[in-house]
Length: 174
Length: 86
Figure 1 (cartoon, rainbow over the protein chains, first blue to last red):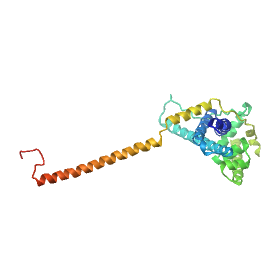
Figure 2: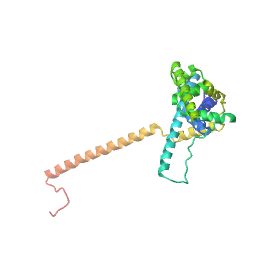
Figure 3: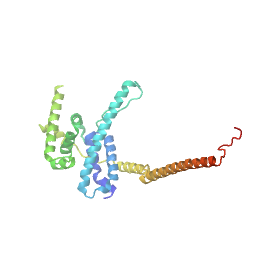
Figure 4: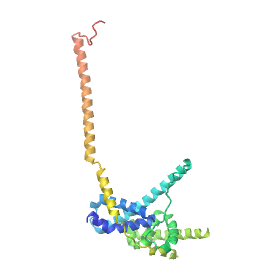
């Protein structure tokens, strides 16, 4: 399979998965670029289609999580520097801008609020939730992508749901 | 209990922007242009090591020959410098 064919086959998958993590078109585009540069560098390693797909899922998940961590670091750094440099002219815009093209306008507010809580979950719980609830993957597929047993995936999903319920209840109380 | 997760199932899959492939190709090309081959790095390092070894060898040889010259000068009672009026 040529690089162009690989891109045509998996670009939608990568872009959408990245979108579920960052909920922002520009950031998802950047992650998609990173993923395909890596795919280009290692394209000779994989022969079978199923192997490539699982690897692309893994690399997209890792790149998305790294991207979020780097963005949070930048935010913290900007906050610290803003305490010492009181420059009113220069403002760094690192706030999270919810811009998910796969969400209908009437659901945007509700889902933005739900994603705020999903984003606060630990990385592996967030990944299980995204793969099984948004990407509609079976537990076997999720366990293969995450390199975990199906029992571990089930337990992570359960914990994610419990944590989300707690967070939503706490939010309602406020 | 899972009702609150139901809206997640309504999220639509969207197409990746059409210009993205051109951007990726451009990035790959830029990385290729800026790539320094390991062959070049190793050959420069090897040349540097060879140059240093030749330098050290020459210095060692010079040291030996100046000792020999001093011995000959002493044996024939030659003046080791050009100062005639001591």
